[in-house]
Image 1 (cartoon, rainbow, N blue to C red):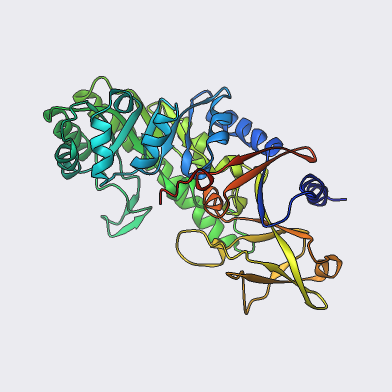
Image 2 (tube, rainbow, N blue to C red; image 1 turned 180 degrees about the horizontal axis):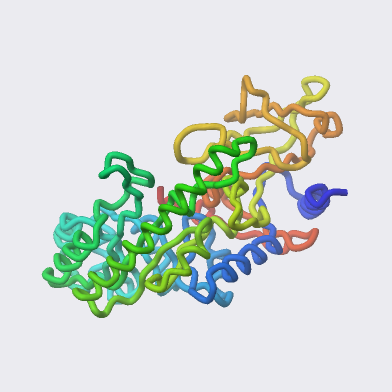
Length: 400
């Protein structure tokens, strides 16, 4: 029996009393992945990206482990909810235009001390001030550095389009704009190198492209390490009380941690290890989050149909954004239908061994987005479900 076949047997036994569709998190794999992140971080704390987990119980579980400290949230409403729930160090990783949220933040000392907001434009400061109402709490500010690699005089750009702040001078000017405005304090710098941390460099059947990605990432790491150090020096001259410099992502933890100026690493997807993280040479993890769909039809030899399953991930549309049939091994989509809204035909010889009601296990392309489809996660240890916990959706929250 292969390791994957053994996992399927465990998951089927653990959930035999539960009808699909359902989602699980294998806690043994989750904890092993957490240990691997800590090992690669080399002693620097890991700030957990909540969007990649979207379950309070699992956020609490990982933050209770050595090597993890603080959360990186994705909306202001989520940040405030987490802070009210007892999380006392929440970095909002994206700028917000939530005026009601800013009014609440600036009027509550507990929230203002727990939440740090992201800024990359003076207009964002004005928006916050206009939203204050009677709130006068000091707003903790993090400045975001654009990490993109610019080549040929800026004519070629590699990396996500995020912050407009690219040079040390631009980030320092932004820090001065914050310092001149009463009611704000620069406490951090964040730089997410998605073109390094979020792009696989070992693509099956594509050796030339894989080598090109590795060359690009090596060049990007060198350029960013030098520029990030300059940015930190420039900002510290304006804001000597800088508390943290956040960088990284699951795919680049060990490289970013090696930079002296970086004080903490941001990561989260590496806890669940979705399918997009199968194509890395820098690390390998254990798939921890899966979902199961039930077999509801047997249309013919070598084909079964499961209920639903069309859960594409965000990003540029393509086959890599689709869930992948994982267990039993050997199933594939019908290319004329793919994963559907209400039914998904699956082809392959393993289909002939599946009966109505049997579970087919899938891996989502990305991590936390799976939780937008399910209101609970069944936590599996060994071959038993030991707890069932709500996702954000199960607690009545869909922040985006």
